[in-house]
Length: 252
Image (cartoon, rainbow, N blue to C red; front, side):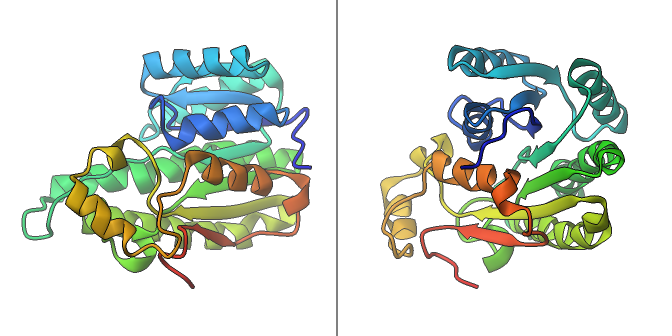
């Protein structure tokens, strides 16, 4: 199940060696997709491409600034030149900042929204033009439990607001492009076992875990597996949906 043979997938934000993006890229490649590794971090791109190829998958590295319309359009042109199509887009690129509203500046707000919302919009817009011509596509964006429950783990109010915006954007876009054979969904991870989590003081980490019914952080593979499902034919009638992956920390 969840076979993605002959599909071409773009995954943004894969620079971190132990981040969610890299695991998503590896998982989609394992399922048979040719994966485009897109990030600003050149070293991170190279490492992920090597990891995918070492595992027997197909990968193409592309330097991408999601906040630039020109950069997004150039990426799409490069992918089309290489593979001739784009089937899957995973909007994973995102940034955060821990700051109170009182101390937050307008530049802080613009920076977070610039990547998490405006960048997602620009990348999606560039890719969906190709998908509409194909009459096929899967767009999957990463939101966050913070966008649904108002923070409480990492980041400030601007981060929570940006991730809430991802949810609304995805639902509206799903209504627009469903007639074109494109599904649009989002996933909202809770606390995930990454380097950020491991850097927390023990007292803070214990307090967060205490509010998770399953009593542990999630693993990047648990996010990646859900993304692979949404990218597959098995999810062909799911659109405009948001999937919580948080061990029961937040329930809709």
